[in-house]
Image 1 (cartoon, rainbow, N blue to C red):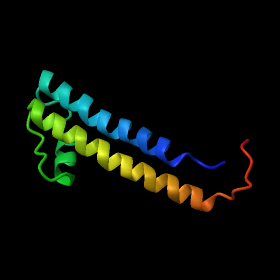
Image 2 (image 1 turned 180 degrees about the vertical axis):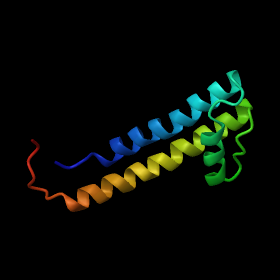
Image 3 (image 1 turned 30 degrees about the horizontal axis):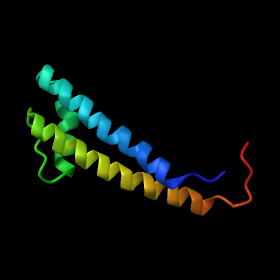
Image 4 (image 1 turned 90 degrees about the vertical axis):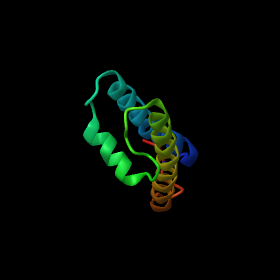
Length: 90
C-alpha cells in the first residue's frame, strides 16, 4: 500500500505546528510550562526565541508547520520508494 505523500505532509504539519502552538499558548497561560520543548524548537528554528509572547508562538507555529510538512513529504516519498506498486492493502 502506497501513501498519499501530500496527505502525510499535512498530517506531519498539523502535528508539528500544532504541538508548538498548543504548548506555546499553554506557556503564555502558565509560565514555565513546556520551556524545555520550546527551547528545543528555538535551537532549531532561527528567529524563534521561545519567549512568552504571541508573536513568538506564531513564528514557532509557522516554522513547525513548514518544517514538519517537508519532513512528512520526505518520509512519504522514502516509504513509497520501498513499497512495491503491486503490494495490496491488507
